[in-house]
Image (tube, rainbow, N blue to C red):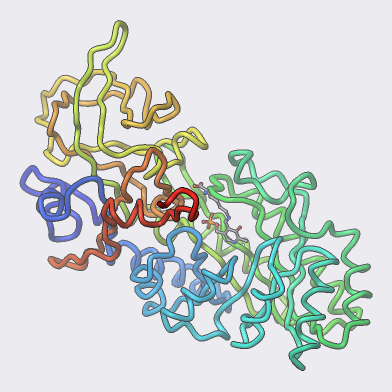
Length: 423
Ligand code: LLP
């Protein structure tokens, strides 16, 4: 059962009409379903268990780092994949055990490494020699040993949008397989580094299972070789990337994904880590917006809404599709016609959908931009001096504002005037 569905003609999130929340919170706002997140988590965990994979889910906070979202998934059993000191602090603030935190990213700074070492995270996923050396230096100063994974770049085409593909040789991520041995030699000379794991992440929103298989096979082959050569490896980090349905794509079935993992880890005696982000939260959130005007252009109709590219940048940045669903259920015989759904920002790129077949929409009508739980609020900005869309979490028939809309004084007050302008 979906957590967003029509009941009595009104789009509900769990047991609440979204319209009721809109009335209290104002639009635009993001709304997340607890049940949808927990169900996605449990589906992922059960698929691994059913396939006999010994694995832990480390939620990729970058998808949605609202504290309430992290806490919901942590309560379900998730650890965290973090990519900055901010995300590390968020994971710790949500009570995640440092031994269930991995730190990824190509540009960790020494002070970020120091915090990870201080709290004792499970591993740093290392991607370059200078990073390895910097980590060793920080660990040495602190008198500790840094547990690491080498993130491998398997040179596999993830067949996803170029901007979110990460496992090709031309991408900035990971270490090419032929160069790994050089990294190991260097790490072995560094007393404050312990190589414990290998990691991979080839991209996001994968809708085809074969790149996973190719990448995982290459990773497992390398793991086995290195282990036989005496490297004390314990874990494999398979990254994230599992796609979700936005439109008509058919992402790989969880059981297929889990089976691929179980086949490659056969006989390796490796603990497994997974870093899903989008899969856990993408379809657990919507962006609710109100129609401001309907404008008849010379060759098309524009539905102008009060959400914009600063709230949800995915359509502008990746030409991403998000379903657009009226909060009031259209009648069965409603006439459908194509519209461009656009925001108020002064750029033509502020377009959510072009020539999208929609039922008649008029000013004041509320719409839900679906699948906005991942890479929505976290990628928002205040462009055009717009206030942030607040975030709401629903559980059953209860809702809570989990990030409020700031006011204009706060927005303007973030800027400081130098003394020569503030007389
Ligand atoms: N692990 C690593 C190392 C990653 O870089 C990412 C995502 C993940 C895990 C989680 O991937 P997921 O399971 O969510 O696909 N803003 C883009 C997506 C960027 C993904 C970046 N890395 C979008 O809106 O589509």
